[in-house]
Image (cartoon, rainbow, N blue to C red):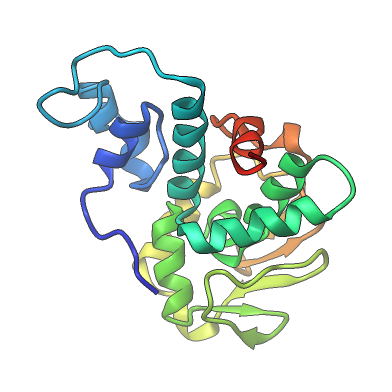
Length: 208
């Protein structure tokens, strides 16, 4: 599947929010958005008032880029969320949060979703004892995600775990950093996700 391979800091500047695409760097003063808090390009410093449609579009683009999802797949996720009874936006968040690459990132086995996607692609993780190398694989409550025994000494994973030990684990996940194993306990609630995106604007955009 095609993926964006350009400079990712440019995406954060375009959306005006941190998408945390470069992991550890995003938390330091080296973050491009901290240095240049305006859109890229020669006209980036110009301030223009966005229309309602433009704000909805920017919200959609920001969420897609944050989770590393292309338009076609994102539309499928929205259609699935819309079919469920309840709040469409909440279901949409649960769907993207249950992707394997995102769960690996949330567990602390990778410093960013981009890195998690690459590690999953290379077959470094097991789900319920079986190797899964599909980043978009949907994890279900009760599933156990662990690093393959042969991959436990990989430097990116070791470094990510060292950083993760200092953070408070998410309430919908259970993780054992000594065994490099985690459990997806349940789908997270919307208010448990610190998502700097107006999800309702996305719902309104697709509902037109």
